[in-house]
Amino acid sequence: MEALEKVSIALEAARVECDAINRDEQLFEWEMTPFPQLEAMIQAKDPYEKLWTTAYHFAIISEHWLYGNAVSAVS
Image (cartoon, rainbow, N blue to C red; front, side):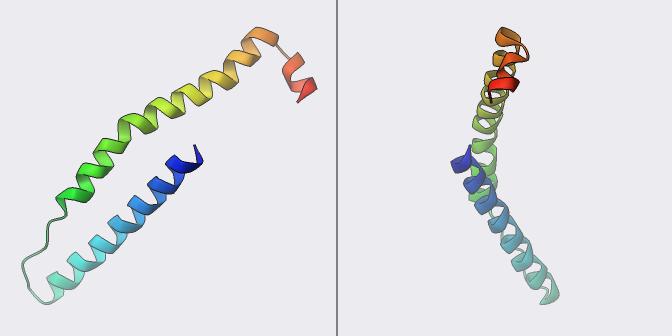
C-alpha cells in the first residue's frame, strides 16, 4: 500500500504542475499543452488501486469475521 500511495502522490503532484503550466499558457494566450501520458498513467493505476484497497480491507475484515473480537484483544 505504501508504494501505491507514493505513486498516487507523485501523479497528483504531476497533475498540479501540469495545471500550473496550462494556467500560465492561458495567461500568455498560448495553445494549451495536452498531457495525455499523465491521464493514461492515472487511468492505468486506478484498477490496481481499487484491487489492492479491496484486498487490504478484505484481509482486515476477514480476520474479524473468523476470530471475532479475539483479534482486537490480541492486537
